[in-house]
Length: 305
Image 1 (tube, rainbow, N blue to C red):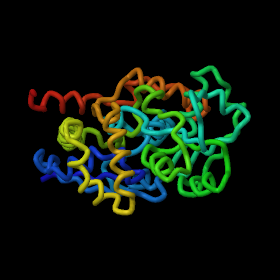
Image 2 (image 1 turned 135 degrees about the vertical axis):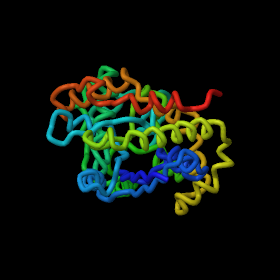
Image 3 (image 1 turned 90 degrees about the vertical axis):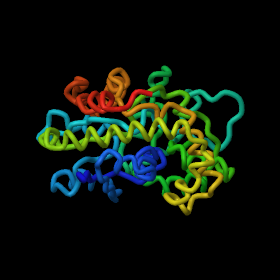
Image 4 (image 1 turned 180 degrees about the horizontal axis):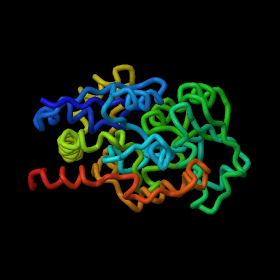
């Protein structure tokens, strides 16, 4: 059985299709053994790609986007998230919340795991016709640190992943004012990528992996959340069980786990947000950033249902 090693930027609920595929034995069914680790700090995924400790990395598309046309050549081949499972949490709100309500306020945007929470939020704010420059963003600290400070009174709002947002809401220390699964549209939030010079070498293993991942997504969408409880508890034993189940159900009811195929228009939109933030100089052409041959071949190999 061929082996495929993955270095991930975190161990997160939004990566559930990969964990579910492993749980169901789908990777083994496609004759590939997947060995995955989460790195802390997350930039270790790049070191692992360099050294060969990992064949592929799992993380944000913004990383390959920033490295486009640099000596570090990376190729993206599949996604595990078709939406951005994040939310803006405030202390309280009544009625309809608008992005303009943040003008003059302070927003905590955790950034120790990367710049995506801030950048995507700024993009949504601009799209609503509001200038992000009128809002103070506190960045570059970890999610646990910012959550602790928010609960202690710092800031007017905080950008959080779906799971952590649900934790605050269930504790009564915050309210989801805007759910990005509702207002953020489609987008490749988390993707798989490898060194460009290894694509041909890994091609067959990547196809097998992607075929199994796609099958996992299909089964996950059809599986009641209650049936996923043992798997969720095994991966996140410290999380309050009801909160974990609610967060999983929220993501499951969205389009986050719809497909492993990356959408070209959504990719272009995300890259343009990064360009507005000065994180990339030029928007990479989709074909330069994403190699669709793997998902094309995986979809041809998948059984017709």
